[in-house]
Image (cartoon, rainbow, N blue to C red; front, side, top):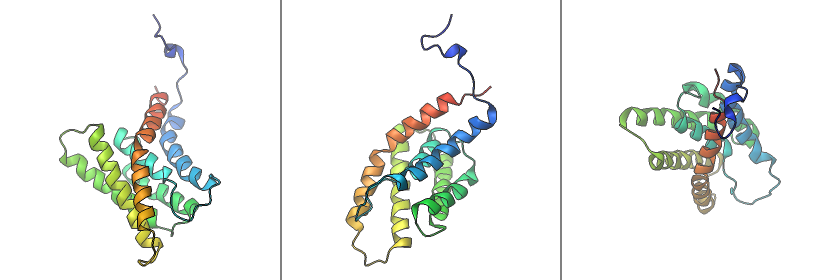
Length: 171
């Protein structure tokens, strides 16, 4: 009568904490990167907050409101050291672009989501480079490596978001 995993009697998360889990996972992703004790001369660590934001948006479009990118980007700007307002603008533009793509595409699969996430990651990282650094700074190769590495980590972020989403089934 019960399923093999024993989830039939697992307690449900109340409604308010269940709605806060996507926000908390993006905040945790934004706060995790500055806490990693790595001193790198070039940007090598992926923007985990952006990864989680894109994973939630592409996996469960109604988990985060359309305006959620602005306050989450503001928090990311505060903890990452980027100029204040850069992630607010870039993340909001990514959300708007994903809304536009959602209205145009008839169906999506994981490969299209991965491609959309890679384009959004490239847009945000290149836009952050243009905002934070002078044009003559020799960081283009490092930014391209960071874009490639971050795009390759998108399936892991989607898996984390899916695991959290499965846990937050509220009544």
